[in-house]
Length: 470
Image (cartoon, rainbow, N blue to C red; front, side, top):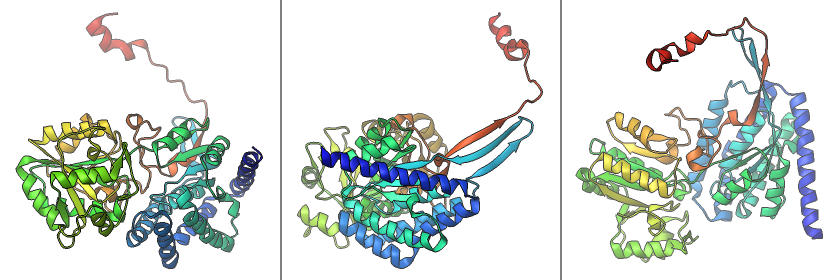
């Protein structure tokens, strides 16, 4: 009990230091100061030698992903975020609307508590730190146990930059090692805003903390390939997305739904991109290895392809240059885990009669897992993306793109750069957008008297009265 109380007191002091630092940061703050501080954080990671060191440490500590892709992810996600934030007004007076008598100011939330997943132990916290610092907040990070050492090293690099520009390092802190559920839950209760990226249990804990919370939902991306698609292009993009960083992204494709007229052609092109089509026996072995008692094991989780082939005893049968596995499926649900999220270098494929059947299948898959997150489609019929938007319970429809890059924003689409995707009420989340700086501020309205604008009843109800009477 004494050790428990001691741990909680340490968290109390962390939050107290953060609160003092944040209040001073805001009181002496300006947009220029916040911009400079966010640039310092970004450069602490994007400096090539730092990025390489941190990526290597992330892979060695967590055993997830691969170094070269993490370097790319850290660079692109941070560069894209800084592009989104460049010249963005995030503090102080924002606008005036004289006709409405309104003025709007932006203020920080205060002290942000954020839970960081082991799958992205560097890119995700950096994104959250930059958004916090750009908007005048302090932030305290709760890493996974395996992500604590990489995060600590990241903060060391950030502090070095802060010391150059005279910014208080208490604005950015992390839970002392080892991070525990008890420490994290206590932090959540003391913060002004909780942001949770990770497991469903962590998201639930955030919403149950009594503190305003933003949680994001479970992945399990489904991509439809219809009869009008450029099959070669779709295959290249699906393969590139599937294998990137060993499928650590929640936005990596997990299932393909192919219209029967192009199914065989798609399999051929996916094979040309390094895919290996499994037979029923091989698929059953994969399922037994990756899931036990309904839960994903660590055996194949985000591992290199050589490790996966060895574990599945496919080294001799796999084609040269094999990069991912393709698993034909027909059934969906908890008794068929291959229809769910995988976070490994294999993908399920379903054959359907036509686009309508494919959309029904996609909806069924995400009803089982991943509702609210996103659905992809490869097509030259744009109207089909509108059909998905109106019928599926999904917050993003990704058209003709490599899903794991596009969903969190990229340089060739208009979504905000982010590593945390809100899934709306369908996914049990408080936001339906990509987490971005706008979720880190409070808006203050000045409300003045204007000429009265009171409508006559007939202006509102005349059409209704004509049809239905008074």
